[in-house]
Amino acid sequence: MQANTVNLSALTDAALVRKVLDTIALSMDGKPAGAATVTKRAVFSNALRYAVEDTSQSATTATRRG
Image 1 (cartoon, helix red, strand yellow):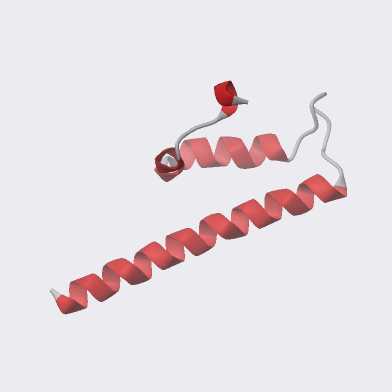
Image 2 (image 1 turned 90 degrees about the vertical axis):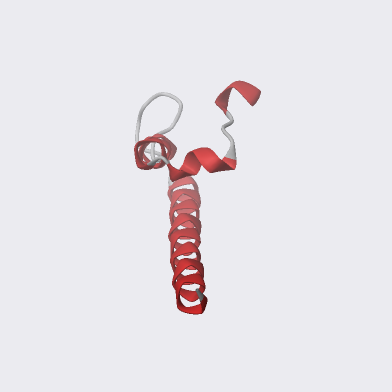
């Protein structure tokens, strides 16, 4: 598992995030993943969207205060 783990800060790399999302959509044999896995992919994608939204709001708030 360690070999397939990256630091959270690596998720700022859009190409890496796209690769992760594309990989999650496939099973180990390269075929499309089942419904439960597709749901997990959607949850991960939504978590990333929330993080971007939260970061954007934090930056906007900091700019207004500055």
